[in-house]
Length: 406
Image 1: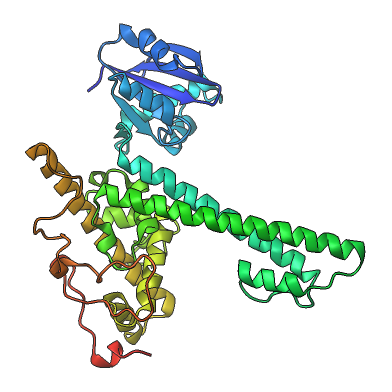
Image 2: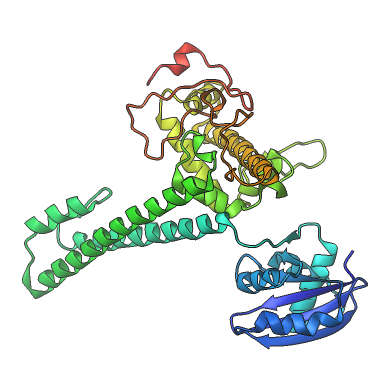
């Protein structure tokens, strides 16, 4: 047990630190401006408490830079979620005023009481994947916004507009044949041409970002892309947000984290489970895209599993949720295998590569151990992936009738 816990409430322009004892008694506080020597000033102030631990609120967000600087200085740093500190402040019977020192003290108390805290590690390759996957998502949102704006302008140029998803090539043909009326019509035509140029630029940027993602995923040596439907974008999203899979004790904990496990709302003798809206929605969406990819391929194990659930009487959404949970378990197995391989390579010394599963293992890249077939980042509908059984998660048998293409 640490002798002193130092809670930090980070902000864009300043950081407030409050030191408390194990009895939750305040020992001192300091406010520093956000600057190049911010970590140095905090460490110098905390030198009076040799047995100290830092608790930074939102070390994965606004407090990321400060937390990384403290780790680089050799300090032990914990990441405290903002909701934990908010609960401490809400239930505090003493001074409940909302200010930076009280917030920092709540962070320190939350770190002392909670088991949900986790140590902050120096940025590794997972952070690289997180950076580029965020960039890809931002470009995708910008592209969708440009397409929506183009739809709106075309409704004022073409009768009925474009009733379906629009592409740059389709928009070029429409604008080439459009006949604007008056100066206002010409202005709308010019505006549509500018938005179309934005769409083309964003398309090119998305292609470039996807290449960077694919290169970063290959450099990580992960076997996650061997799960059918998991391409570079999905793999980078999952690895970047998970970071350290060891913080999940089991596949059930991982499913609860990504929202693919139902939540219990039982009362008395009634056992009721409902769809979870909690968890990391980015990973949930990535798993959803992998599930849709599997369903679209008639000869994938995921499609057979989905059809089996439908035959049992489940609706489309219920069968899809069952498949998403199965994919979540497969992803967890791959992440665990990559972590074991990385630890083994580290223990053996130089020569190994993180996640390079060249030797036979329970979740290796050998065809016998593929989960839900071979990965296809951009699957071809004509592709007929192999569907061998996996020792970690053997697919449930399905009748020949269910395996027949619709």
